[in-house]
Image (tube, rainbow over all chains, first blue to last red; front, side, top):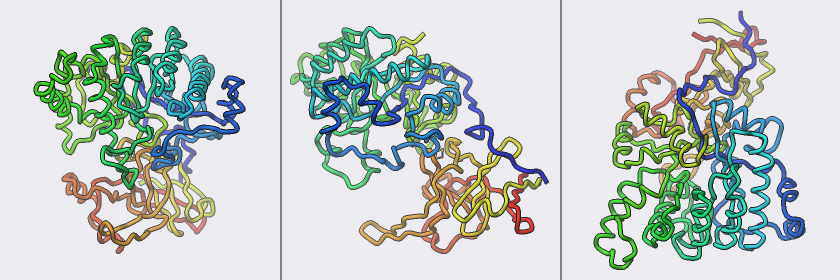
Length: 366
Length: 146
Ligand code: FES
């Protein structure tokens, strides 16, 4: 009788993806709290130890899984998921043959109520991404974490890193204190445009208001399943406030918000514009046109329609073949596997574009 | 059917598991209350390493506002990726019974004993691959793979 052996690989199947893959959403975190403290400007360390971080209610971990992470993503060497470069390389970058990966650290910095402290934390996080991740691993690029509730501080952070090739976008969370089209955020957009950096806006967070459009829900499943409403609110605000008329070079990346809701929302936005456009006379074009010129959308968590064929119809209605971006969301529990995520077989052109080429263009990757 | 020795019986105490490789497949061998079961370490959803998932039971509620009960402790495996739940003893998934695809898949599970407390739930559309497990001379756990 044969004797079974220990498994030789992390997964029992090799990746069967046959095109280049750029992962536009990877989450990293600190291996220990000291790392952040050590990168923090000396004048803030005492404050950090004594008072610490204060954000808003409504954004809590664990979310369904400890650290909101895949159970198999805890490094054997210790530390939380996404904290160990060697294991991220083995499990994600090598495991799936990923050409480039974009880091989106969700570490609670941008939403600090003490804005100056938030700015200091943001600088520390950005230094850490550069020195501990992007410099040692050529496949990685970073996102500039910014204290977005203060337009000027956010703009200063974008200006600080804008010329550095390690940073390919600025990063916000979808739930902000006010809708993102409001003028208090405009300095940040001006800086992003000036530095030719897109702004990525990621799932989650808490801006102080109830986390749904109708108050506080009971369950996490409502938070997770209902997240598109926050994305919708931001798209509506950014477009109707005229942000793109004001900053025509600005590009926005919607990360982890889904995309099946986009076509009907744009129909509705266009219809409202035709009827009520007099209220926002600076908006000269239909919202759907503005959206398709200024927004990019990541695919995770993949839309899983009742019938697979609906997915093809969705792509046609979306009409954004040049702006969909594949993402895994590693190491989070709602990870999408590069070779299994799409519910239909994509034609070769779409496949290449979604899996890598759109992201390559957006982020200016070689 | 080839038989493979995967472990000594005392290597996998109740509630524990061992993941092994047999002929290029990885397989998780579980001890649930003294009985052994084997599942392919590959989730039918997106191919996640199913057998590394957390073992749990079911929190059940027949209607909103009603009572909650916890059942089948230690018999349910949650995929480490997206948390789909599978019965360790049969490989059966237990969510999403209303999906049309269910019927096609139900055929696979016909004849499987349905634990009594699951009577209120319908089987879901997916099954994880399972293997025959036996205990040889009370000493070794043996898995049969086709
Ligand atoms: S891969 Fe197992 S639940 Fe998705």
